[in-house]
Length: 375
Image 1 (cartoon, one colour):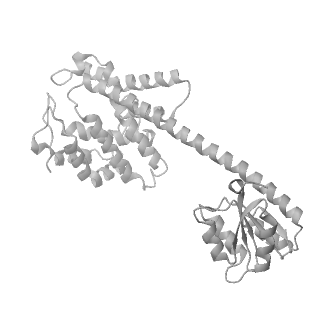
Image 2 (image 1 turned 90 degrees about the horizontal axis):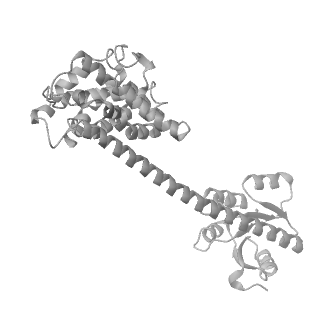
Image 3 (image 1 turned 45 degrees about the horizontal axis):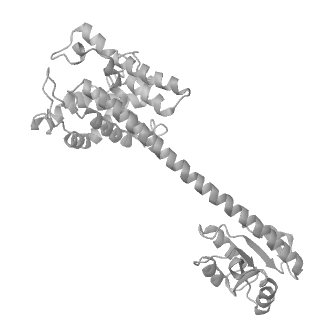
């Protein structure tokens, strides 16, 4: 005889006292037995602190029949994995099919054969034990995978931060440009998410990826000579030609990392598109490839609006900062020429949020005059 602490628990559900007594006597040597004389009581016991390992369930009961009890058990996250065996006088094949379709693991008809009932119970107990072990192992594995994924994500975020910090060090006039543009593109993407042109490419996951890879848009500036990048004045045509190469330098740097990795990565693909194409214009007059319209990647089109807005409201050695409403006017004027018209519409909806983001991440060392961010 098994030690009581080692016994599995079976819940027997039947509205007939004699049947409950019969099954209790049959099972008590091998199992702990709980009984319920109604469906309602069965659900309370099954969902209690110490749930049964298996349920023997009669079908023909008043108020709530066994089918409904099984349906509710399988609909509850806590009880859905408890094996249910119908133990019933209903022997019609359709009744058995219905029970199995509801999620029961077996169907035993009365009058019962005690040896067969015990044999089937042992089989299902063993299956449940194996299933529980596999479920526990899967949960442990899932936790390990989640932890490792979080570690990889943290490493990725830290790497991006280091790379963009390097770019900011080279171009100290941009200050908090990186942070501002991250939140600008996020604000735009959220407003575009329900638009028919963008909803398939701006899922929540896409927006999160856009936010994280946006800081790499100007990473190519690390390859621009100081005499051009840090020139205290407007650039000559030759110098502007040099500065434009930062788009290709950035793309090539990210592509080199991808090559070293040995496989395509969605994050790096998006980062490359932004780095290379955020200076393209809707009418095809931008650089480096002169792309136009929808041939410009969506992330790059969104970044174009964010990047230009921030450049306009930021004071540089060679120019004062524009006021917010002046920058809005420039963006509006570029609708359909410099910028995707629908993205400009989203910008106009989000302009108050842009204003708030600019104020939140205003450059401490070289903050623009207060009126530059006023409306």
